[in-house]
Image (cartoon, rainbow, N blue to C red):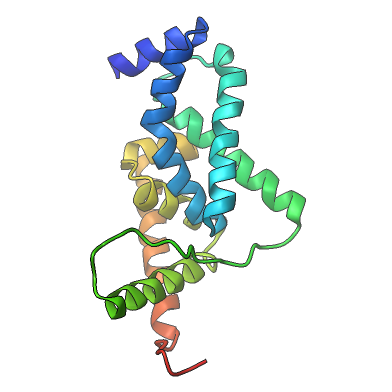
Length: 185
């Protein structure tokens, strides 16, 4: 955390290069979190950019309080997701990205992967907000239990229990759905 703290302190002094390094370090994790929370890449990218704009505007007010800088970024991200949901007044329809990573797989494998990802994203949107958040933080963004607890303002035991219930609920949701095949609508 020492390097992170140095970068944050430099960014607070107006060092654009230091903030750029923080951006490079965290953008992908914030983007993945947003993608799981909102369901499509265009909105996720816009919201991830907005997280960093808000962070840049407010970095002078950031204070070290036992939590890493990433916890502050994810709190901004969470608040943006909540604000977006309030402004839309409804749940967003899940749209699966057309651009899957180049995995050098056979076309039929890519179709199967796309269907699996689509079903997973649809299933995630049937979870509670807290369950969606823990899934996004733990699995999409790769945060540890401790980091997730800091972002969500909960203790580690609560995060473990929430993660377990989210995974169990997702498993139930996904096993209830019939498997899709190419020949069926």
